[in-house]
Length: 320
Image 1 (tube, rainbow, N blue to C red):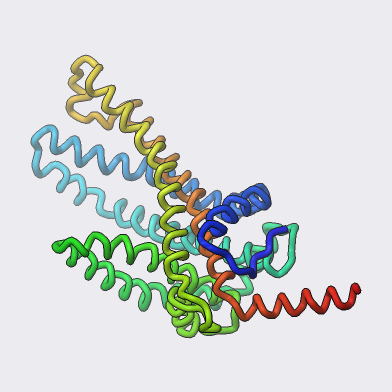
Image 2: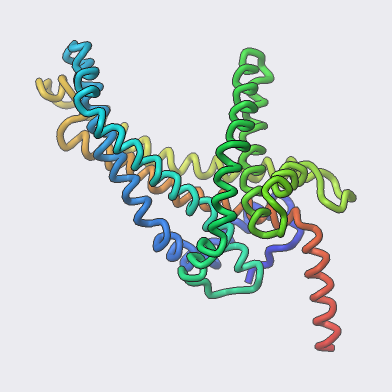
């Protein structure tokens, strides 16, 4: 059984993230699929069929030189676009809630000593915390998101000077860590939203005991390394359909329909299916980032480390 509340160095975050899925991966993804699987399938289906139709219309109108064709198509189907857009937004919001908070509730139960976690247990956590989840969503939408956009905007503006590129690489992983720490702390402590937000920022730069050096670089580096690993894996799924598409263009004899719209036909369907699979894989792989962040959060909770160490000493004394 893995110990969660303990001090970890940079290397331990990487190895323990893989160890976690080695120990709990089967049960973890079983529950994840049961809770989030249908939402993921619906999102991929919308991506494959809905946006394929949209791109086909854009590409087809441009190829045929009919500059007002897509505008006319959009006006004739405005209702469909609104409905699809609304459904997509709601599905995406629900999926993000489950995707982000499932690891939080799952790791919380493991950290509390549970070993056999059922889907009903996690579903119960979502129901019991419905009010807090609502407050978290409001805080993320109206406070965290605007502040994040301002910070990212400043980083982009500073690209004009060399330091800008370094600043973006520095800010993005740190911002991700702050957001995930916020969610972990909000549901693992009795703090309110603003207190957890304050903790998630402060914990990136110092431990609560104030006696140890800043954990910023090991948290930042761990997130960067895991992100690179996941990026390489998901890129493979993205490159495959593009290779097939390019081979089709370069090796197939000229065809009027294909020249008019290369996204039509079986090739277009296959390409979007592959991109849909890539999207699905990226959602599954993102769990490693969230688990890695969870391990970092438990590393930051030095107050719990001391409590657990005292409990272990007392247990040894009783057994002795």
